[in-house]
Length: 315
Image (cartoon, rainbow, N blue to C red; front, side, top):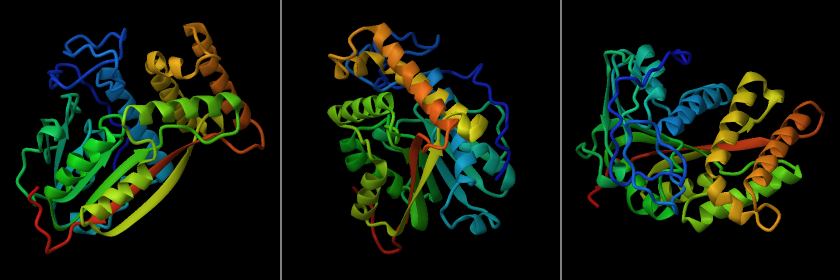
């Protein structure tokens, strides 16, 4: 759907962020960002993290063969109001395909696409501070790849409630997330996956988004809930998109080095040992990719639900 090969530029965009942004200890942020130096935080919101999200958009779109699964595109032919929470990449192709639909993008950073169709608008905001829209504003609300952004408690207390609040009665909410580890039999693959899952659990974050989103959709009174899974094959076996998915995940693992390394002790205690583990993981993935063995996969989830016509959302 739409054109997934657009050229995006964040130059000349004001890269301002809210005070809750933090960065990994010792990792330089893109010039122009402000941040609170919290060495205990694994949350990373900078230019590099936003670029990974944009690449993930292309990868996920390739494997899912769609931009959304909610039954809303037929209504798009007659015009609709759509909200997307994220860096804005998802919006561009759909906005070009559906010129009568108004697309609104919100994100905590102002790294939105510079080339913007006439029917799009973008706004910097933090959903934890509340979306600055009235109740029941949008026919369709979409959010993706936010497991790194919120704790489990924030998902429960604020995120899904706020997304539901701005959805019109009868409108649809769709959340798309990936599991934090990988599914594969290699020693390095299992070791890394176990450590990442433990890190997220220790930080109070969601490691299995499919299960948690289903629960939260039900608890917030959404109806006609559906859940789909898609395994993204990592490495050469899946061609250029599989290689891109692998490299994107490896870069993410590198940013988490200060936090994963203590969890891998006593086997891994130095930076060089950690780097060797990441290199071994990459070799495992590509060795499997060139054989008849089961590939290493990165599992993604889509959960959709429809807001009830009769329920009031004043939290």
